[in-house]
Length: 154
Image 1 (cartoon, rainbow, N blue to C red):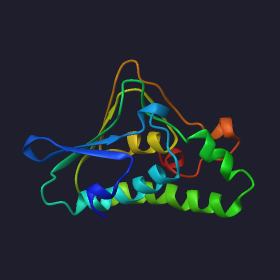
Image 2: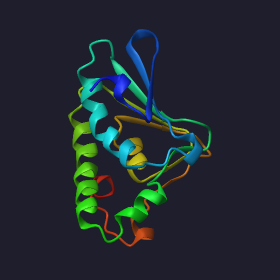
Image 3: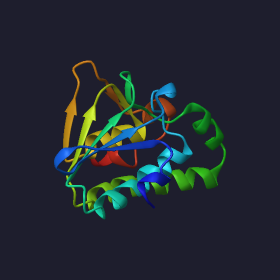
Image 4: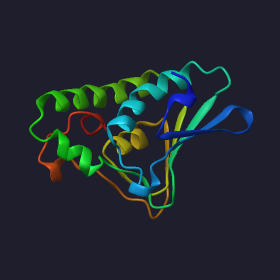
């Protein structure tokens, strides 16, 4: 993959090798749909292999949310669909492992609500900077599921 292949992550080069990666679904508070969730599994290898990038700063578009968790319309499609749930569980693990495998420093600029996969990215970064008005929460318990990815590690 190349940066241009990502639909829901915007990339902006900054001076001195800094890459700004913005979760870019502001109309839904950067909630994770199937495509963004998949993109979060792939982005770390692309960044890792980019010789121009020395460090990546991840944030959310808009001023309300880093990422508001899973897009509810996507979550609803998973209910009763064991195959889809298995894919999401595999991807959740890949987000964690691929972030940990990235040799480039990852900084999260948590500018608002962070839940779900967005919370994983926010807290598994090498450095997390959080705005005073930001909120972080793990939505697993509200959905009645056990934490099995970042929440179990962090």
